[in-house]
Every structure is written in structure tokens, then in C-alpha cells.
Image 1: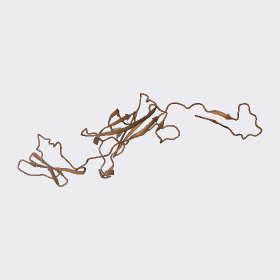
Image 2: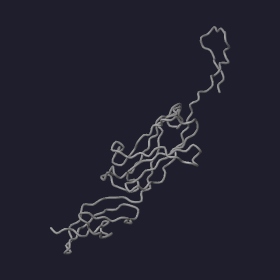
Image 3: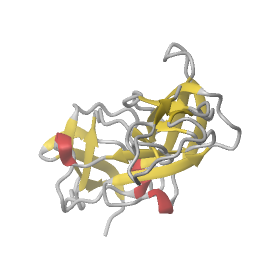
Image 4: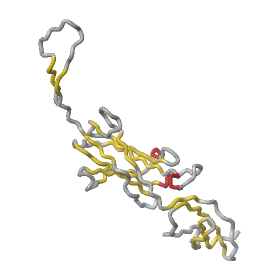
Length: 220
């Protein structure tokens, strides 16, 4: 079989480009593709002009607008979903779901681990005017929690000050491009215990005949 000197790259049936082969490799940088699903496949051509069969198809998706979400894992107190906690070193989980909500991939095409390079967590303590990077996490195998979902958990080591802290996250694709920030969550850190309540009735030393009594007081 003759050596391939040129490759014809297609998006389904549409010819995109015909890069030449250098040694045993070929490439095309900066190929423009409209946002959406693309079926990439290629044919090789030899010096005599013989064109071979199509390669296997690579399913890809461009123009993704999916962004990660953040979740407070250490929500304490009266509610486990109000994002109020007495833990000043909480755990924040970053979750990225690249499912087929935008028609990106069908259910039989898992998204590979290599599709997501990194996840970044940011925080703001001034109401969202200024954002600082908390952590940039390189995705590893253990973060690939399903064929479409990537996640990791960041544990604060240095205590956060009491007050409202906002969190958001971004993801980086295999080409190094960062997504837009995801939805913001507001976490209230409250480590100060309330003042002791007071019992105003019954007063100290009271004696009762019955065993059912009314008790009341004040609290602040």
C-alpha cells in the first residue's frame, strides 16, 4: 500500500480541509466549526491520487455553554440546604455535567476524561465585585464520576471569616480554553454562639401543686 501524502478531513459529508502528511502525522490548527455536534472523519490520499476509505468517526461538540455549579457540603444548623454553616473551613464541591442537555452527545457516546482539563473554584467576600481564585484543580480519573459528569471537592484549610462568602466555578477544555463562570452560591459563615436565654417564669423558688406548668422567657 502506498504511503499517504495528504488527508482529507470531513465534517460528516462536508470537506473541511486537506492537510499534508509530515512523516506519519498530520494536523490542522484553528479549524472553524459552528457551535453544535460534528462528525469528524478522514480519508487518505497517496502520491498517485488514490483515495482510501473513511476513518472511524470522531463525535465532537463545539460551542459548549455548560458551566459548573458549586455545592456546600458542610451546611449545618436548622436547615441542610440554606447554605448557612458554623464550619469556617467548609468543603465546597464543584460539579460539571456535560450531558446532552444541548444535544451535545447522545446517551451512547460517553464524554472522555480528556475532555475536561481542569476545574477552577473562585470566591468573593465583597458581594461579587471582586473574585479571587481559591483553587485550580487538574482533573484526574477519580473526578470522572459518570460518562458525563466531573466533580471534585475543595476543603478550606485556613478559616474563613464570619460573613457572606460567594462561590463560583469554571472549567477548562483540552485546548486550554476556560468557560464562563457558573452560577453563584452565597454561603453564610456564622461561628458565633447566641447569648444565653433567660427564664422569666416561673421565678426561682416557686412551688406548684400540679405537675404541668407553664415556662417562658426571653432570648436574643
